[in-house]
Image (tube, rainbow, N blue to C red; front, side):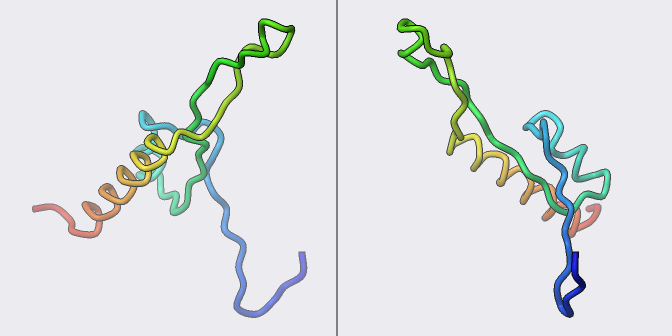
Length: 81
């Protein structure tokens, strides 16, 4: 990597970030996460020898994860009541 003024590399936590562990990941001090918000869908080609299912991004799940992260950050910024 070449150093460029004003630019920095950001490392994101990813690989298995879900609704069940997102808050724990954020509480560990991570300031950026990557998730697929995936859902498996049946692939009709399976009947013709295809793979059977594939993963797609579920927009509702992605929105829920973003909202969970935002609410956690907002609560952390507000501090204890």
